[in-house]
Image 1: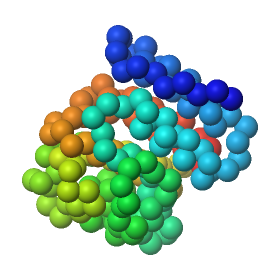
Image 2: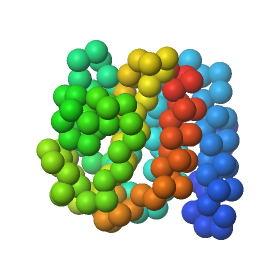
Image 3: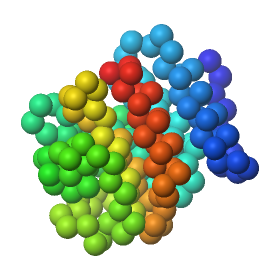
Length: 160
C-alpha cells in the first residue's frame, strides 16, 4: 500500500476525516497491534504540524510502558497518576495541557515540549494504554483536534 502524507491545510474536518480513512486502510486486516501502533504514530507524525513527539504507552497491568512512537527517545515506564500520561490513564479521560511546565508532576522527557495531549485507550472498561502527543508550542491542541484524536484512538482501540 502506498502512503502519502496529507498537507495540513484547507478544511480541517475534511483533513481529519481523510486521516481517519488512511488509518483504517493502514490497519485493515493487520493482526499485529505493534505494527498498527507504529503505523498510527507515523501517520500522525506526518500529518500534525508543530509536534515533536507522538506515540503510545501501553498498560501492562501495573504501569504504562513505552510503545511505538516517533520522536526523541522517551521515558520507558510511567506509573499511573504520574505526569500527564499517568493521570490521563488513571482517570481514563483525555487531558490537554497548554503549558506542561504548569502541570504538577509533569515528566519532562523532551525539554523542547511545552504542550501535550494524552488520550486514554480504553476497551470494554479496560485500560490498554494512552496516545501521547507533545508540541514545542504552548497551547498547541484545540477542542476540534482533541475530538479528532479521540476518534483516531477509537479506531486504534478496535485493533487492540
